[in-house]
Length: 69
Image (cartoon, rainbow, N blue to C red):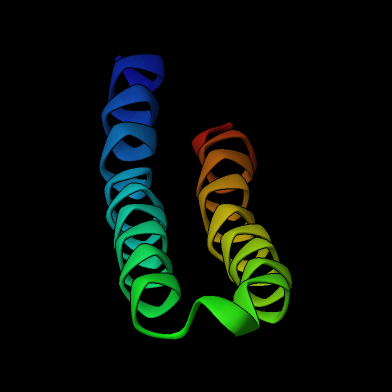
């Protein structure tokens, strides 16, 4: 039973980063359409933001193992 609860917890923990990464990508496209000349700077900031958002998903994944045992 603990494994099933940890799996559900991980699924819930991935909702936040998934939505965050989607919003980051959408806003990056919007900003690039508004000012195409800063496309390179926006791309770097987008990848950094995606990495930080993905780290939250990894923390949620690890918490399932740490607190599920």
